[in-house]
Length: 230
Image (cartoon, rainbow, N blue to C red; front, side, top):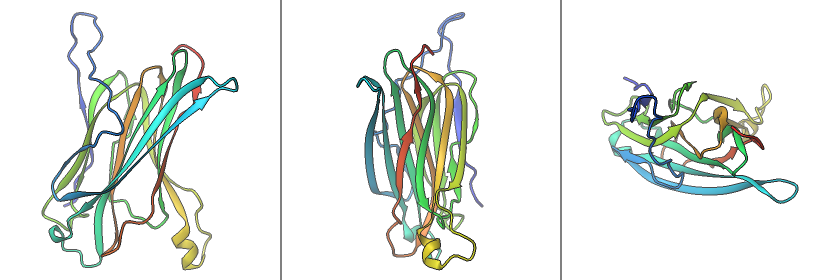
């Protein structure tokens, strides 16, 4: 039976009447997530970027890391596909006097790449919370064993949404080669107003032809900033 995705929200204990919650230190995108079960890291890549004003002032910086985990073929009984998890972690850090208004963590995949399970869930965030983003994988129900990838992050209000949309969708009745080259973006979007360092974790279980390597996957983080108090 397929497992449901879960975004486990841990309510924080108030340190005193009317006092703000004590949040954990924000996660760093470069830190490996927690992994359990028949999953092996088969690739990791990190990138950094910065946003500058016309005067050369750094308004903010970002980092994103992509992890690919392969499900042990000996632990599943599908004779045509291999399974795995594609996982991304990102940070957005606005400079003093600047405010993060949106953050989009993008994973760009082949148009034909399936998605079986996904994390985190979308939702409205009413207060800053420490959460554990967890993705469980069972080779799309083809394995009695279960693996998981998870990361602790602090999330801030207001909203998290997720989508899969075509980057260059193939035309109707397009040749098979064009179908194979077309791409989609799997996107996690946060919208809010925050001067503190942001962190996000997102991923999905997928598959590719048995005995082959995972297909090429690219990734990026977009983060509009505004020079204002948050």
